[in-house]
Length: 354
Image 1 (cartoon, rainbow, N blue to C red):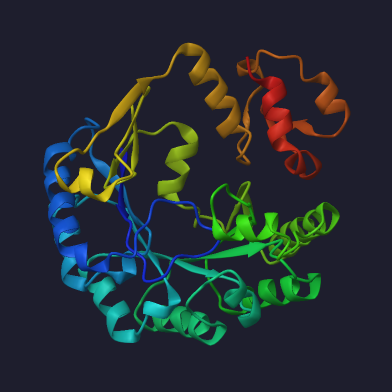
Image 2 (tube, one colour; image 1 turned 90 degrees about the horizontal axis):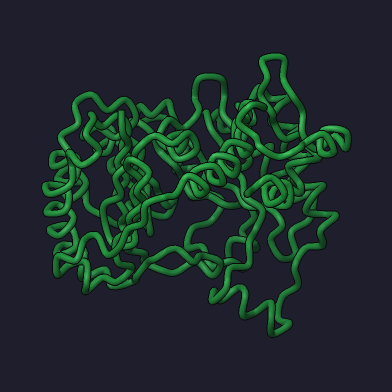
């Protein structure tokens, strides 16, 4: 079964670290939704198999009205979808809105909290505060959501280990089912990167970042979470089905400006341009992955997960990485990255590619 992603690029305010395609032109939401519905009608059956998961991401999907979200779900018309996720900004949440989301068929939330420290939220340009973040989760639970993920970021400028530990404890205290955690990346062209280059902020040192990551892994494992992908932790059975499709080669359709698709070894992408997209320029380009491309992608994605990849699939000699404690072979013949290996995973992957 396939996945379907819908990109909603609208944000009330840009986060200073984000390089995803987004816009603050909220007045264009209605015409954008009309274009999205047209693309869904044209491409809904493109994968050649039923839709199993739906993910509405952004941008900030929670800037949309309940009516707009319902129109999208009705257009997709996927009665057998097991997981229907929507990203939510805590600043947009109230009980009535969350109850309505649950009523129209959203059964999983991904709440972009990032940190529970108000000073850090302000530093990275988030428009909510810690109190709103906690209320958003509590209201979601009251509305009937029992599959909730939150995003957290570590290695933020000025962030201390004590603050990071506090963030993790606050998250665990909310009794959520899934946590996505990312070390801050200074992406080219973002405001935060420009401030770093201008000497206005200072990046956390590598040793502290590694310590933050190690503490995260140990504490969440202690709390019963499975570290099933480099940046993702879930209670058993609560792994993100949609995101897992990206890592195991399941076909998916990307709807909306800037969205990507992957079907039958063909990767395609939509224009990251609001005007072009709304004029009907849905799929801007595509490429067919060669056998080499598919192998390299299998290495890159497989080693990101706790399932790993079969030793027989790897063409390189990995004895040195195993001896160094960077890779481990399981009893069923899979190769997985160790905790030490995760810290330099990109380097390992590059060594194994052809």
